[in-house]
Image (cartoon, rainbow, N blue to C red):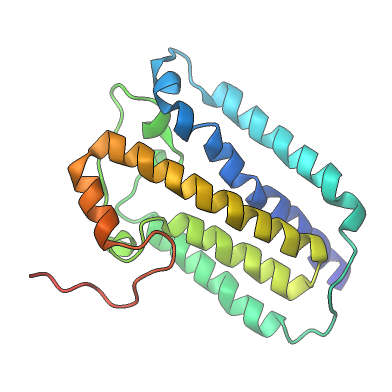
Length: 198
């Protein structure tokens, strides 16, 4: 059972660690993607899957290397999993599936272009990325697999850069309303208490 959890954790971290790279293909080139007549996902999705394969092959030799083995860590990992699931569920409220999938970034015409600042997004600007981080930390902590911790660290570094790119792209798209939102709501570490309206 433990072996299977370690294998699943490694594969989950492989996929999660490539999410910033997926968005690196979108945000700096958003205008170029929007100018295309065909869906850019014909290129983007296969490229992302190729990233999974490359990262899996590169990290495979260390997938069984453990930093520790005790079991109590799952007691902390389970609440982190629950937190991630909660954040995913809240992220889907007031936010369409198209927005979650990044369609407004790559399809400029006749696509939904609205800034959502209520619900969970009144406390944290990028709740989906926070959910990804919770899931990666949960797998890393629970399994103790060294490569999971390495992939989590890699995702945190590339994710920080990607959040800055996304903020710049959203600021370009929405202007002053997004700048005001960015000043008042933290990027990834959420505000615990709702801000009082004046």
